[in-house]
Image (tube, rainbow, N blue to C red; front, side, top):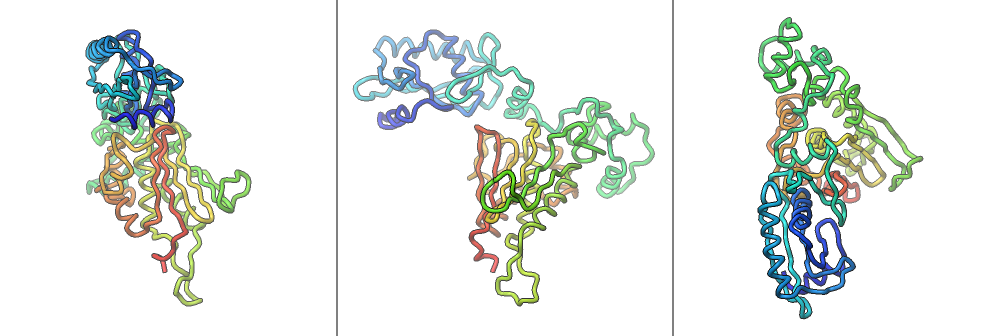
Amino acid sequence: MDALEIVEIIQRGEDSRHQFKRLLNNEKQAAAEMVAFANSNGGMMLLGVDDNGSLVGLSADEVARHNNLISNAASQHVRNPIAPTVENVNVNGVIVMVVTVEAGEDKPYFDSDGVIWQKSGADKRKIVAKEELRRLFQASDLLQPDEVPVRRCDVSQLNLDEFSRYYEKRYGSPVGDLDARALARLLGNLNLADGEELNLAGLLLFGRNPQRFKPAFVIKAVWFNGLVETGSTYRDSADFDGRLDQLFASAMSFIKRNVVAHQADQSVNSQGKALVPEAVWEELVVNALLHRNYLLNAPIRLFGFDDRVEIISPGSLPNHLTVEHIRAGNSSIRNSVIVSFAANGLLPYRGIGTGVTRSVASYPSIDFVDDKDRQLFRVTVRFGDRSHTS
């Protein structure tokens, strides 16, 4: 990092990835700051810079003291230990120490007092809520949301007819007449239950009434008149609930009845051509249902406008995936049980990681935004460029 880059960072001010410190007072303070970065998306501390952005610099003795302090803090006051990098840069005649901490791969990290810190804007905060802890475990592949048992949801909540049809089609033999204990064992072997309780995958794939236990896991759909979310003027609106296959069917029906076909070069008696290939909608809706973060109690939102459709899923991309990665065909499975059943006939999904690539190839006017701060993933399908449909 050179002096010009540091000046540009200082001019922008502190944010969730950049923090200014005149000095670090002790090893515990340094550890807390580094834990917060490791539990978030990584970042850097600029030492020798006041909170207000004033460039003060460090003396030679302060540089030596901070090198020792940071090394001890990272190895002795952070669990698991981390390895920050330290760089001393001459900026306008003074020394600024740049301490860079990468996003951790073994979350959650905590300090020597057992406190788990995470970045919150330019500051940090303690993590105490169960849902936040689960998300940190999820980031390290220590927890799969769809394997979490649903409290007070025993196997009597299974839609046995739906499950039996799927089981016989996939395995070639009927489920048979099983008592509750035997059914629970079978569901456990299929990773759809934990003891006597359905897990989240079992509930969402085969539950009789999933929203009784998970009311937030719905699709809220609104088709607005015009180009903005007016909140009061809309063409169509609905809340969809049910199993994942029912949510998929409802969302597809909503899109089809609101996306108007256009004539293109067809005769006046034709029904017109679809603005967007149906396979594209299938891929995007399925992805929203399968890859959303089920540790977040929030609905999928489906918004339509005159010029676009937006599908907004709770949770940013998992692990270190980026928009560029998924455009190139890379994938990382968040809900492995749900995905495995979907790929075996429950939904139009193959599970080979090329769906986004194929969708963009057949309809290029698709934008993806991964919003890690707000914990959502937005897909926008635009109608502006219609040359590929004519």
